[in-house]
Image 1: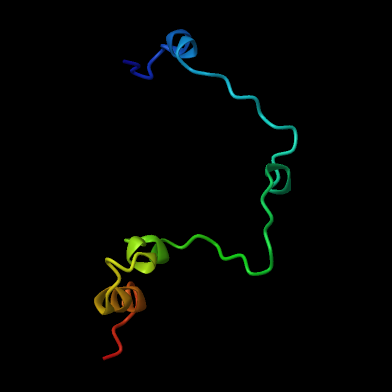
Image 2 (image 1 turned 180 degrees about the vertical axis):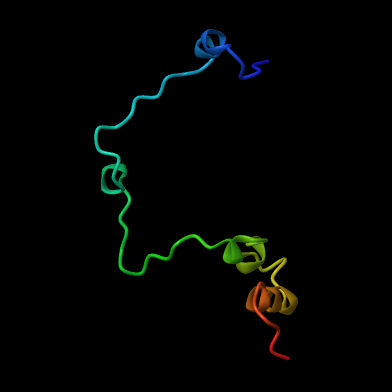
Length: 74
């Protein structure tokens, strides 16, 4: 087990080196970021399975997303 204290030589023997791309832009990785791109939001990520899985999607899940970190209107 690595402790992170002075064991760089041991850590180097157990880590695979990954080359760094010359151009690290999104385009060089094959990502196409369009005008409809939305930034990641933790509000939309919590328990996100209930958004796309009909087995767990409920009205209560919708209410959660509508009010999470926002005041409850009613």
